[in-house]
Amino acid sequence: MIRDYLIKEEDFQTIQHLIPGPEPTLGLSPGGPGLRPTIPVADVVLDGNELKYLTQCVQGNWISSAGPFVPEFERRFAAAMGCEYGVACASGTVALHLALAALGVGPGDEVIIPAFTMIATINAVTYTGAAAVLVDSHHETWNIDEAQIEAKITDRTRAIIVVHTYGNPAQMDRITQLARHRNLYVIEDAAEAHGAQFRGRPVGSLGDIACFSFYANKIIATGEGGMLTTNNPEIATVARNLKDHSFSTERHFWHQRLGFNYRMTNLQAAVGLAQTERLDKLVEKRISTAARYRDLLSNIKGLTLPPNRPTIQKKDQRYVQDESQNNDKNVYWMFGLLVEKEFGCSRDELRAFLANAGIETRTFFIPIHLQPIYFETYRGQRYPIAEALCQKGMYLPSGPGLTDAEIQYIAKTIERAP
Image (cartoon, rainbow, N blue to C red; front, side, top):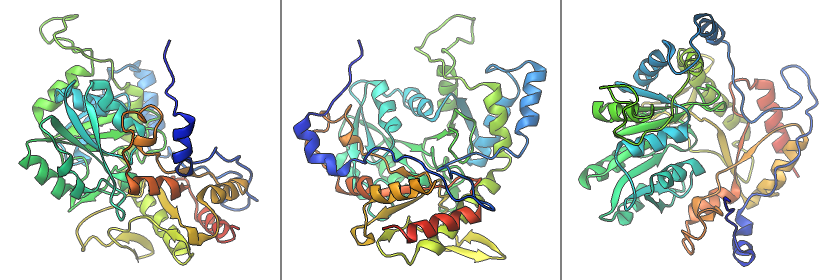
């Protein structure tokens, strides 16, 4: 029987103040023009060619991983991310595992990851038999603190996984320079960062491999699905082989590697292609939403708003990013904020107040070292910035279907929180 990993009661008491409370019950908003009865934390808008392409799949009888939309989606998405090669797969987690497997990471190896990340990042490392080494976050960017990475490198380190947290690109120049100096691979976990840029270059093209998620709440959404992008033809060839049971090119049902069934269906790729065609529009909506929130919340005492790099400005009735500073682009997959003591109520109390008003929210990630399944592995290790983000962080509704009336309603509700 599979076992559950439980934290001992005496240990849990020491970290309980960091762990989010139960999910609050969602009530109803007052309704009205532009205001849904409940405002979801994320949604998806399928107003492009999704139905047209799906119909072509059904009419053409191509619903499996074979069919024309898979290679076309790979080509178009990879190009949008500044890469020559794309390998579509079943999920973002699968993309991470596939990337590590393609690089030959396995037992005895170490992979450096941020302590503050979604559980999929470390799980993918664990699947390979390698060990994950944790690094704390930077207090301003919420990303892995690049200044702390080198001290964690050992002679067993094979790779660094960099997460572009909530769509904000990490300091990739410093990280890739260090990796090259130490002969390490760099994997971008770009699950939340479709369309983001660092120094004018698309996220997804900055390391050796990048991994994207197309889960239903992502900027490009296919329900489930993922993509590995790279400019390395050897990595792309190996990853493509591994995701499809490692079938041999010599003869069918002949396998020389341990492969996986990690394929994406033609149906998912059809939706992904239609979404990729509207990537600029979907990213602009996220940036506009973030700017509107910032306008309405910036003067509320006790709220720390997300990293604003580069500055968002209003131009020709649109919100745009001033990329003259450093050519970076934060795509604000989710608009997160920190609820400080000065706000007057806790993060969980604010969430409950918003939920009662029909507004759904989510807490930030629980750091890896506090997770029951990994607690003993990292016993005694502390990552204070990651812990503070977990204790105080939440994000607001940020999907492409969000209306300005809903943003105003959310902001006003936060203003009158007890």
